[in-house]
Amino acid sequence: MTAYLLKRLVIAAITLVLASMVVFAVLEIVPGDPARLMLGMNASAEQVELLRSQLGLNDPLALRYLHWAGGLLHLDFGRSYTYSVPVLDLVRERGVVSLPLALIALALSTVIAIPVGLYSASRRGHAGDAVAMGAAQVGVAVPNFWFALLLIYCFAVWLRWVPAGGFAGWGAGIWPALKSLILPAIALALPQAAILARVTRQALLEVLSEDYIRTARAKGMPYRAVLWRHALRNALIPVLTIMGLQFAFLLAGTVIIENVFYLPGLGRLVIQAIAQRDLIVVESVVMLLVAAVIAINLIVDLSYAVVDPRLRSRE
Amino acid sequence: MTLHTDVPEERLTDLIGKALANRSFFVGLLIALAVAGAALLSFVWTPYDVARLVISDKQQAPSWAHWFGTDHFGRDILSMIMLGARNSIAVALVAVGIGMGIGVPLGCLAAARGGLLDEALMRLNDLVFAFPALLSAIMITAIFGPGAVNAIIAIGIFNVPVFARVARAGALSIWPREFILAARAAGKGQTAITLEHILPNIATLLMVQGTIQFALGILAEAGLSYIGLGAQPPMPSWGRMLFEAQTRMAVAPWMAIFPGMAIVVTVLGLNLLGDGIADIIDPKARRQR
Image 1 (cartoon, rainbow over the protein chains, first blue to last red):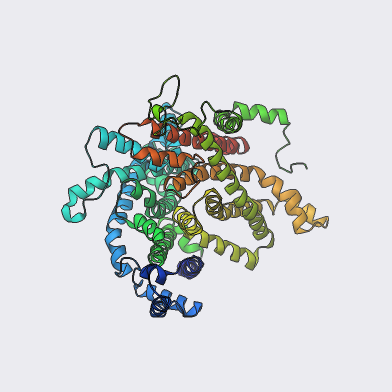
Image 2: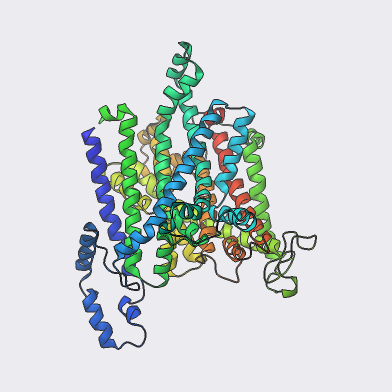
C-alpha cells in the first residue's frame, strides 16, 4: 500500500514539474512583448526597456522559470499585465463561477448516469436497455455548446424561465446565481452523463459475468442484492476513473460553455487574456488546471486502493 | 501480407457478410458514406453558390427552395453544411493521421523494447494527458494564430498519446504469443516482427480507436471554430455557423439547428461504425451488448 502510494505521488510530482516547464516554454516562444503591450504604442524604447527590467523579462531563461515556479508554490502567480491586480485575485474571482459550475455539472451527470447504467445493465437486451443506450449513443455525439444553444432557445427565449446568459454574482443571492448556472450545467452534464452511463453499464455487465456472481445467485441471493452488494462495488473502478477524467474535462471544458452563456469564469478569463497577450494570466490558469487534473488523477488512483483491497496488498 | 491470428482465417466474403449483418456497423457506414459523399459532391456541385450573398433572401425559414433555410447573408444553409463537411473531415482526418503516425510507432517501440524507454515514453504520455486537451488546443491556436492548419496540429498532438497507449497495450498482448516466439527463433529482429506480425494484428484495434478519435476530432474542431479559432472565413465550418446563429436564435433557429444536427449525425455515425468494428472483431464484447 505504501509503495503504491509513494509511486503514485512521485509520478504526480514529476508530471507536475514537467508540465510547468512545458507551459513556461510554450509561452516563451509567443510573439509579442508584454512590456510593449502594457505601455502601449506611444511609449519610448527606454520606457519599455525600463519596464522590461522591472518585470524581470531580461533575466536568463532558467532564472525566470525558477522565479515563476517558486512563486507558484507560494500561490504567488504575479500580477496581471492588463488588469494590474495579482493574478490570484483574478483566479479567485473567476473560480467562484467555474468551480461551482463544474461541480454542479458533475453531480448532475452522476445522478443521471449511475441509475441509467444500473437500470440498463439489469435489463440487458430488453427494450428499456435499448432505448436508454440509444439515447446515450446520441448523447455522446452532441456538442455541448450546441445543446446549450438549444437550451437557451427553449428555456430562455421561448419559456423565459431563466436568463439567456450573464451571471448575477453570488452577492445577489444563491438563487439568482444558481439560476444563471443551471442551463450551462445541464449543457455540460448531459453529454458527460451519456458517456458515464455507457461506462457504468459496461462495467456492471463485465462484473455480472464473473463466476462469483453466479455463485452468489446459486446460493439464492436475490438479483437485486447481487447487483447492489457485489456488482456495483466491483464496477466502481472504471466508473471512478471516468468520473475523475470527466471532472478534469468539466473544469477545462467550461471554456466554451462560459462563452456561450457570457459567464465570467476562468475559461473566459483565459480567452480574454490570450487576446490581450496577458501571458502571466494564461500561464497561471493553465498551470492551475493542469495541477487540478494531476491532483484528480492522483485521488482517483488512491480511491482504487480504497475500493479494491487487492490493490492494497499487491504492491 | 497475411493475418496471423489464433482464430481460423475467415474468408473475406464471410467477413463482409458478418459486417453487414451488424446493425451498428451498417448504419454507421451508411452515415459515414453519406457525409463523405456530401463533402465530395460539394467540390463539383452545391444547391446554391455560397459565395454569392443574396441579402433579399436572408434568414428564410426552411422551404422547398431552401431545405434547411438561409442565413443572415441569404446563403443556403444546406450548401454551407456540405462545404463545412469538407473542413470537418479534413481537420479530423489529418489530426487522426498525426496521432497514428507518431503514436503508433512510439507505442510499438515501447512495447518492443520495454524497460527504461517504455517507462520514459509512458511518463511522457501521462504528461500530455495532464493537459486539458480542449484548453490546450485553444491556447495553441490562439498563440500560433487561428486557422484550419493550427487546429489540425492542436487536435493532432492530443491524439498522439491515445494511439501510443492503444498500440502499446495491443502490442504487449501479442508479443508473448507462440508465433512471435517462432519468428524470433527464426532470427527476425524486433523491427521486422513489429512490421510483419504485430502491426497486422493490432490494425483493427487501431481502426476502432481511429474512428473514435475521428469523431472526437470533429467535435473539437467544431468547438474551436465556434470560438473563432478554427477555419477562417470564407471557408464555411459547422462550428462558426453555430456561432453566427447564436445571436439570431430568436428569429432564425434553423441557422443553429441544422449545422448542429450535421455534427451530431456525423459523430453518431462514426461512433456506431467504431462500435460495429469492435463488435465484429470481439464477439465477447458483442454478447455483452
